[in-house]
Structures are given as structure tokens and as C-alpha cells.
Image 1: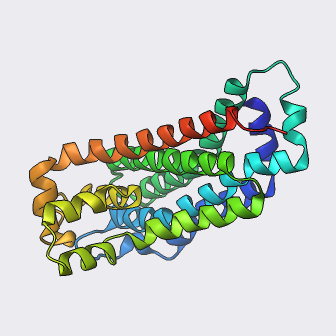
Image 2: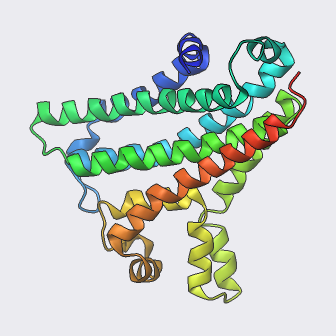
Length: 268
């Protein structure tokens, strides 16, 4: 884990990722978005809502693309055989890399949220500490999910080109299955609403998106009639717990499947 952290801190992908994640927050601050009011959101609430929606579009793509190329890239370069020659078990090596990638993914986001909190205090805004903590947990769960997907793709792929194509396909599929496409098709065919919404919430991106809305819109007015099904079955607290546990658990399952496949494949 320490080796992966030190190598990634020197890599271009981490520098670019940090600049994008922190730069987005700095850009939102400089544009004065916290001073505007939209649908009742103002101050840091407005700033956080916008930032989280942007993060949902950027983080999953960046995580799955960079992670999917990691192990298969090491295999192609010959680094994998060299690393596994050291007296370190394959399990420790695999999960150490997973934890290191998770830390590196969340560190710039934590700095960005800290920057927003510091800006709010300096401007005299009320800092919503509870939503910031919950947003941090939601981002950690989403990052775990796509890290697991990326590790599974990397374990299954035989080349970096295949891994890159598969990661983009997975991301595009999940984006396409957001409510704009999936729900309109299913509702048009008169599927039971509970089934439609259940399929939508099985998408970790949709689970994250809805949870990010429910923190500042407990009645989910923006979702329309779908809010009644969600709130009747989960409630506000229950749905937030689901949005935290489901993507994280899904990511660990995918990562475990990746380890199982990786440990039984030709490593050189």
C-alpha cells in the first residue's frame, strides 16, 4: 500500500485528477454560485449541490478508466512479475493496491470539501456540517463501487486496450440507464412503478444521485411521483443508509471477484 501511494503521488494521473477535483470547487467558489438562490438552495447548500452533481459525472469515469488499466498494464510492462517476486502474498498486494487507490481517490475530494467549508466560514455562511459528512460518505461509497469494477475489469482483461474499452462501456451503460432513458422506456410499456424504480436504484449512479438530492430536498420534490415509492419503502434515513451501504458493498463484491479471477490467472 505504501509503495502504491508513493508511486501514484508521482504519477500524472493523480496530479491531473487532483487539479480537476479541487479546481472545480475553486471555480464554483470564484463564480459566486454560493450567493445565488435556485429552488430554495443558497449559500454552501447551493455550492455543494452543484459540486456533487459534477463529481458524479467525473469521478466514476476517471476511477474506472485509470483503475482498469493498472494491473493489466503492469502485466504488459513486466512489472507484475517483478513485484510478485518479493515475499509478499498476492492477497496483501492486491488489497493493498485497492486501499491505496481508495485513499488517493478520496484525498482530493476531502480537500475540496474542506476548501468549501473554509470559504463558508470566511464568508459568514452557515456551514452544513452534517450534509458535508454525508456527502463525503456517499462519495467514498461511489468510489469504492467503481474501484471494485475497475479492479474486476483489469483482472479479466488481457490488454490495456480491452480494459480501456470495457471500462468506457460500463460507464456509458450506467449513465444510459439513468432515469432519463430507462424509466421512460419502462413506463411507456406500463411496467409496475415499484419495479421501474427498483431497477433504477440498482444503478449505483442513480442511488448516489437520489441520495445527494434527498439531503437538501427530503420530500424529493424534484423526482416527482417517484418520490412516493422511494419514501414509502425507505424513508429519508433508510434511503441514505441504502445509498451508503449498497455501492460500497457492490464495490467490495466486484473487487473480491477480481481477486478470485486474478489469483487463478496467468500472472506473467
